[in-house]
Length: 340
Image (cartoon, rainbow, N blue to C red; front, top):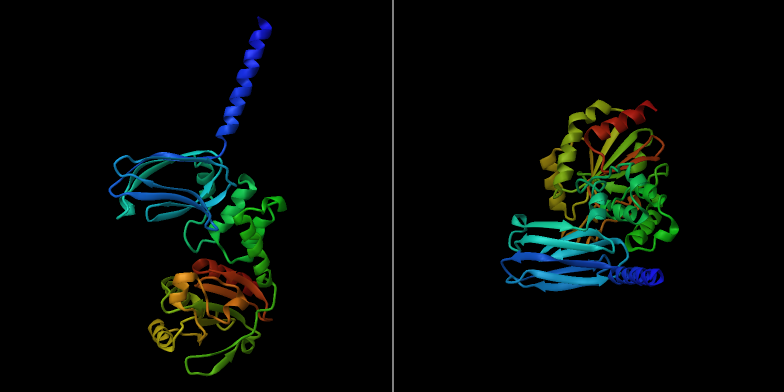
C-alpha cells in the first residue's frame, strides 16, 4: 500500500510538472468592452507579429497563446493605441473599457505585468529625460536594462555605456540588446574629451563663421529650430543668465530650419542676442515627422537625434558636455567648468 501511494504521488508530481511545462509561455486574455469592434495585437520591435485578434464589441472576451517569447519590449496595440510594454513568459490579463474614438476616456486594468511596472519605475518621466536612477543598475535584470535603454532612447554616450557595461554579452541577443550595443558603438566617437568637429556656417548677415574662431573661450552650441517649442523655451532660459557668463562663455545658436524664411522669422521672433548661425541643410520637418530622417550635414558630426541639443566645448576645443542641458543644470555645468 505504501509503495502504491508513493507511485501515485510520484505520477501526480510528474503530471503537475508536465502541465506546468505545457502552460509555459505568454498568454494574453481578458474582457474588453468597446463601442466599435477593435483589434488587439502584439508585435516585436522589428514588426514580427506575436498575437493578433479582433475583439467583438458584443462579446468582449479574447484569449491568445501560449506563445514562447524572448523577454523584451514589445509593441502592444489596442485599437489606435500603441505602447511599448515589457513582456515575459507568463499570463497577462486585460479587462475594462476601451474607447477607440477617445482613448483618454478608456479604463483598462492589467495583471501579469509586474516586470514592466518595475521597469517603468526607472524609465524616463518625460521625452527629453536623460537622468538614470543608479538604483536601476542594481535591481533590474540584464533584459530589463536593455529595455530601459531603449525606453530612454538617449543619444548620450555615457548613459548608454553605463547600461551596456551592466549587461553580459550573452544577454545582448534581444532586439533591445542589439540596439543598445549598436547605439554605444555609433556614439563612441562623441564621447566627452574629444575635439569638437569644426564647421563653417553663415550668420544672419551671410558672414561665414567657423568654430575655431572661438578658441580660447568656453563655447555653448545650441542646436534649435523655429518650429521646435522646447527649443524656444530653452533659449528663453538662456537669456535670463547668459550675460552672467560673459566674456568667458560664447553662446552660439545653430538653426536647423530647412528654409531661409523660417530661419529668418525664427531668429527675429526670438531676438537672439548672441551668435546665431544657420545650417542650411536643415532638418526637414516633414521627413522627420514621417521617418526620422535628418538632412543636416552637421548633425552626424555631433551625433544628436533630436533638438534642443547642447554641446559645451572648452577653450581648447574639447567637448566637455553634450545633451539636453538647460536651466539650472546648464548654469551649474558652466560654473563648474569656469572654476576648473
